[in-house]
Image 1 (cartoon, helix red, strand yellow):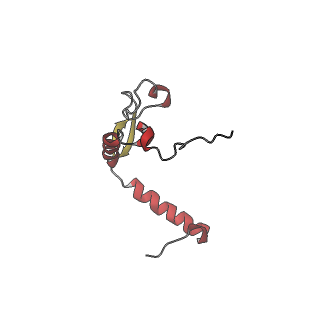
Image 2 (cartoon, one colour):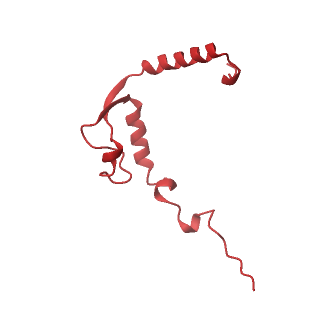
Image 3 (cartoon, one colour):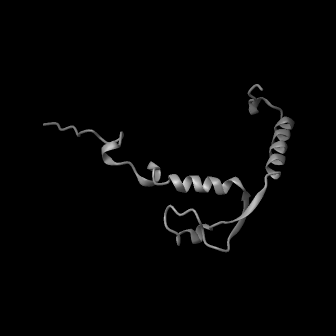
Length: 99
């Protein structure tokens, strides 16, 4: 199937593509899960992806698998954990002094 450039399509074709995508998404099986609000998120520790009880939302079933995958690997993630100084490629090597 050749690549389709959206900017080359007519407005009608763009809308047809959007409707087709929405139909696919509507067929996904969904389940109830807890959903933290930004106001209550502060009560949970950093790295915790579970929110307060009582807040619910419908999401696709694969979201639980994605959540488990992320939580299992968050300790290795340099954006969460940080980069050790000895392995940081962006650390300044040495300063320059002019005398």
